[in-house]
Length: 139
Image 1 (cartoon, rainbow, N blue to C red):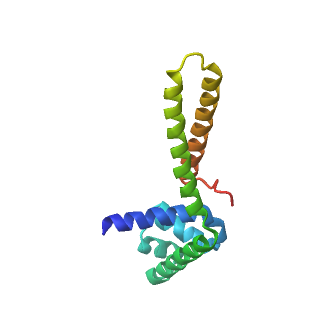
Image 2: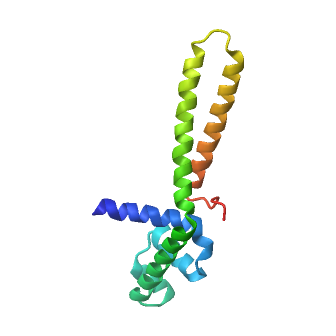
Image 3: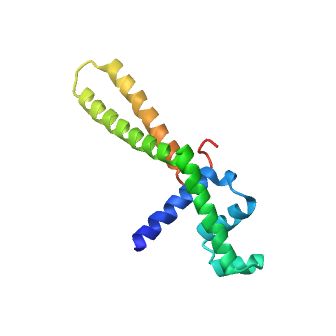
């Protein structure tokens, strides 16, 4: 059960990164406190002088909204698919590069493979940066 809660929290955090600006200011604030800063419902309620139930309802509504946006726009799904493909491509480049090293007089091919490896590394860094809480998901 704890694993499911962690997976859900990670998913909500990613969705929040992608769609944050589409939420209301209040939803953004409550989500930030609850998921990013680890405040309890009671702490948030105390800060805003509202009931814990009201905070809970705002957060649940925001979660539903995030899932609705993902259902329509699929930005997270596409991001995850790109990440898998970039890592797969990088693996193939590495294998090709190792095979090429064994061939004599393959300088031109080595140069192309070196450039491909560099491109793959840059793409992986971009994917890593965007999945670490940055808002660089294209919205």
